Image (tube, rainbow, N blue to C red; front, side):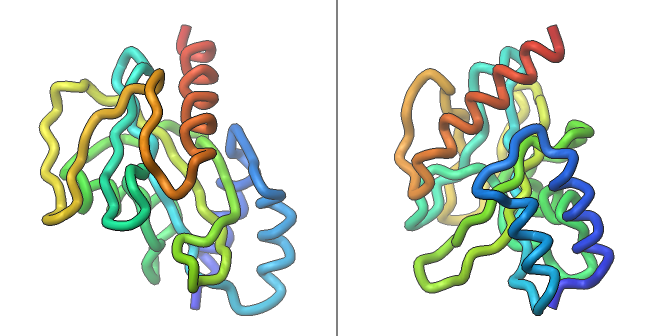
Length: 168
């Protein structure tokens, strides 16, 4: 069961996200009426040129941003930071605005849940410490990659463009 602190943080971050997909905010309001599935959080880590993003190669999802389930006692932002550290070894400060909020299923046998995407910008020379069996790599935004979430590339590209306009 998700605690109220995590739900409140998810609501605030969902409302502040620079992009909303799948009617996520409406879905969250309705989902709060009953027991909720665990929340998910991920981090879109860009290089300073906003030309590449860090992805992990999941055994069946393909190349995806580092992330996972928000654990008990965590907010989605805290879960994103923890998952990023576990999967890549990167310690970063997330940008203030959440990048996106979406509703999706992370496994064919699981129900849909709310996923919050956060963003960070790091020096591309920072080394990775990958989890065993889950390689980490920089992927260029002007190239495609294999993923079970084909819409992610366009969403991540859109956010990189938004950041470039914002950061000048």
